[in-house]
Length: 168
Image (cartoon, rainbow, N blue to C red; front, side, top):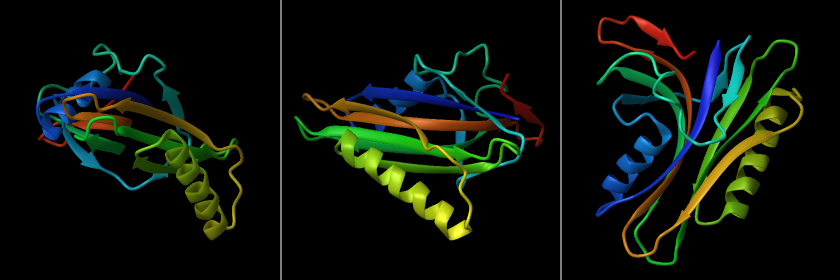
């Protein structure tokens, strides 16, 4: 299995419009999003899209299908305030199983710190050390109009007849 990580930022006349612009920037605007908790199944490869968006050629399914995601998003409408979001993860090398955490806030530093502290605590709770913490973080500053920063981990798409599609 592959899970694809993408980032997006957007601006708009409302916080909702900024969120939609960020979804579009990440390449997932035309799906119905279903949020998952943060468990990475065994035998999973995490694919990080450095340019931000998952290319439309990689996206399965069609307009209106369900998209299963772990997502962090921050919306801001106050000028000169920053919006930051991030997803962090750890994975066991041999099995590929692991954990995601998602955080958002008004500074890159606080989002990164929260990701590190959460993943450390989750591993301690489970009495397992998955190793190095990895993360994808993105931010944007509000100038005049609302903004949104988001990071999304896409598991799979599913149509309304429950046929599932994996990303390639």
